[in-house]
Length: 555
Image (tube, one colour):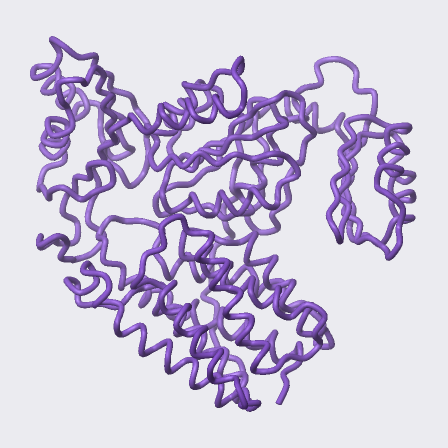
């Protein structure tokens, strides 16, 4: 038995529907009570990005084309660690199905294995008892079952049964799961979407999910200091910023010839190619000629032409470039300097701190608001630099940022900053006069020296490290580790600061969240100054960040 592209497409859409319908149930399995970008939410948004593109595909598309579209959409739409891992697991289908219009059970088994291998390589320290374990043992089972079994429905049932068996063992592999009495959330999501795909393979149709009525999504805003459209203080020589992607024709000439021609009719030429496409950016007065020349190298779809004179006038008003979260359109600018910075941040005060420290672009996001790979890519492409450093400032955003590296048309370095204070310290340690390796090393050492404390609230009832935690109680985190539970916000902050300070500490910075009024902030400052003011510098800054009442750094 073989399955074609239509069946495969329906199976992927079924998987997306299933996770969307069960998102909250998967979120509820998260054992860490801190509010964050939960597993089910991130998996649902990731798979949803692929569903949108698959839904408009023609039913005649082959399995290889369906897998390629799905893989690319997942990569761009991946959010959070669970979303990124899911996108990488599905990348195996793209790799395994190349050139195949229909696929067999053996091809599906190969796809699972390739996805698992890529996922384990992508995670720096793979943890057993997670979605990785479930996917790995599931792939091993698939390899065994597919031998001599051409019946895809029965093959898939056996694979799903193995996944569910392994899922039940995850509490034995992760003590935190056992204490909480739950299975791994990512592994549960994996089992759910595998079963949903199986519904299609059995001929029972796509798992249904009715989208709830939603308000239009707010745009993801990238605030820039050096947007290309705001750089023209004098006369604009070439009016139209023209961009297009060419699907290369067989035997087409070298893109160097295209670059040479574009340089003869414009400036700011950027031509990047791989085995399949050529990506073009040029400023010219003759966009039609640029497109006509590009068509000699292959086919293109929906080129983008923008009038920079009009953009320049608009840029004089708000200092913003807005990236729509719906269509992921963005302004891609050519490099104008050696280095640039993209920082992920939430809160007007924190955003201002990053901009003052030299960040070119701010991606709005953070805890509970994990930006997608595409959102981060948009910021990278909007940074006019040859090398762009990305500061994720949250452990659940690092993997999405690292996926953007593969999609960018310039060099990108993701510094693995897990908190806002770490990101600020890395940015302040930037020295443009040293070589790249020294620069990266110095910034890494700088952020690793920072101690970060966070005061937030419990998003759910939980038991963690032997502590009974009630929804709404105040949580104190010391470098990401849940340390104690309190009833009073300022009391928790003071206790945490005392815990963080040691004999080598010199600076205490307290960043106040949007729910902290000036009187409460001053009360905390006075108490901390009374204890440490004689030997340490104490700064209180309004960050207006959500989720965290206080973010504290000690250096």
